[in-house]
Image (cartoon, rainbow, N blue to C red):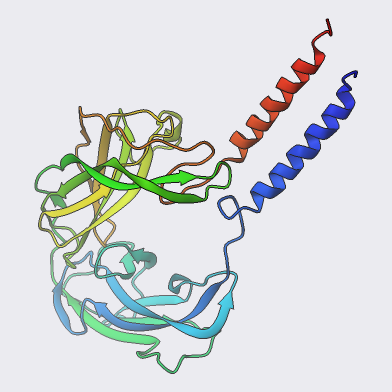
Amino acid sequence: MRFKPLLFSACLLQAALVLTVSLHASPAEACSPPASPRYYYTLTQSFPADGASNVPLDTVVLIQWYAWQIPGTLEDVHVDVHNLLSVTVTDSDTGELAPGQVHRSWLGRPTGETWRPDAPLLPNRRYTFVATLKQQSGPRPEAAQGPTELRGSFSTGEQLSPPLELLGGLDVALESFETDKLNCTPGMCTCDKAGREMSTRARVRVPSVQGGSAIGAYWFELRVTDNTPYRFGETNQHLEHKVLWGIWGVDSSGEPTDTAFEMPRDEAKAGYTPCFSWRVHDPAGNVREGAPVCLKERVEPPGFAFGCSVVRDARGSQGTAFLVLLGAMLTVWRVRRRPVV
């Protein structure tokens, strides 16, 4: 039988379309996020507390909130509290608004939205603040407690906050531990437990920290890469790393804090020497970066199944599956084109 290139091309295109549609519809691939419950937000407390005195001139106003699920409701686009909250800070002596911006939720503890002044406030002045949640689309649940508006005042001192300082470096140790071995279906990325295997875990201690925002809370950001450190603020670093993992967050009140996590798995199915890059944030937006730590020990993580990564958030690859299909069909083409002896 003579091979027909036109028919082959049509079959190839049809197969590619079928593959693309099936993979696109897979939960592991790009799909529309499911509708989420609607929430009604209320405000709980603020920092500085109402009536606080000797507040640093660069203080932030932290507004804490609570989300109450509205029973029996769903929405396709989630509306978070940041889109509803407005904060104004006014000089009580002059009636002038202090310029500033509301920033998205501070990731440390206590959690909340932060208003940050564009410039230091005036010394020895009394300021009032008003935090208001705009009109919410859903009904207020019966269980919801707390107001949708907070008012308070504070008095400034004469000093800025002390600079944010790290009082030491990052301590990292690797250890082996036993975990579930996963058997994943190629392409679909559905995984079943298939016994036990050894993996690698990092035990990390972040150092003491002092200064910065008077709230006294800090949040450490850790990123793990292979061979060379991650460089904060630079783009396209995925081009030079097979492992580029983050963000792992650690809350701290200023004392040394321990954390642990399983090391990321190398998609090349090979070991790597890990580097840990890290920095600390405070609610006022101050950031201090510590010296990265690169270990000489190699991480030999569990292997990867064909078509998807054996990790908690396993995802398939349309490109890999399509290339496999293309390679198989081209092989058939080459075989069919051999002269008959």
